[in-house]
Figure (tube, rainbow, N blue to C red):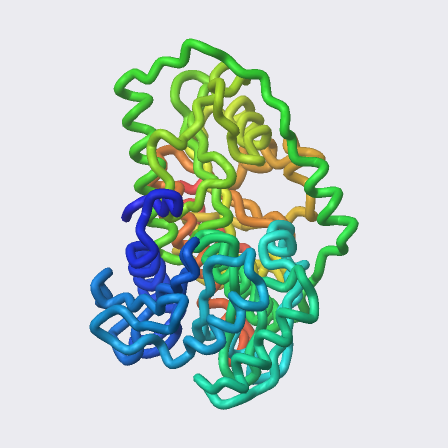
Length: 433
């Protein structure tokens, strides 16, 4: 997967990469959805009408010149009118994404807007969200209604389309894509939380306090060396991050992976780099409590450092937001893996700690992880630990699959967890400490 450098990549190539990513993630269908980029000269590059979204090439992308001339071997998307209308209404925006992702469609057909205060970063990424009334897809009237909604508030960058889907814009394609992916993630989390019980939302004050609690100043060290074992870890982290994205366990705007290197020194992912596009050179070395000069580590770096210092048997950590586990993180319902014996063997009992604990009392989390490999952080994420990184990733997969099964079971009837005595039998039979 190419890193999406919007300064260097041709608009047609950006569109091909992103629509392929959206399709492979199950967020649109073969015929559904369309994306566009407005070039500096006013040309609009857009996906074609009626062409398979799963196999588009750069040659399939259509260019509509500023004078209306169409360049390309296909017709532009039938939704071109509202793309054009958005660009005219919001000239500072250069990318538009429209699709029919399942969770956001669910909100559109029930005339609701997702409350993004469900997790900290979503409010800032998604912004205020509008709602456009229904009109015929592809019509000039639909374009006018969408443009009118964007006109209501200058900070609108996302609009739910009644009985249709969602449209988002951005200052560049990655800005629009991260907003799209994050908003759909919020919608999925909310639906999962509602199946389990009722979502718990963060106040604006809690989100602001969360932002203020994140460390921003780190001591740095110069003369960084990159021996072969260190470089191998960088590659391993990148491969796991991309795999997590492919498996729906991370989204581009969130997810942290770290691996112990030597002693308590470790390597960790940075913030601000889309997880789909992360490369080995983006990874940050943390040595003797200091960060390699010129780089910024994950916001949760202090938590990772405390965990490694307190737990010599832990050699890798993943902090992320899988949608089904986040249903438990945001509903307050107990994630009871005693319903699935194999899951308990992998995870043991997984507790939930209150929002903000990872910044206010990371020592407590590190101490808890001496007895268990995973913890849910309310309205934030799940932290999973292990020896080898692949083991940690496996535990993450098991946890998310278990959460999905529990949410699906909630609509069928009462759960039947195994007893304490049966748990002890598992502990003995599988040598669980």
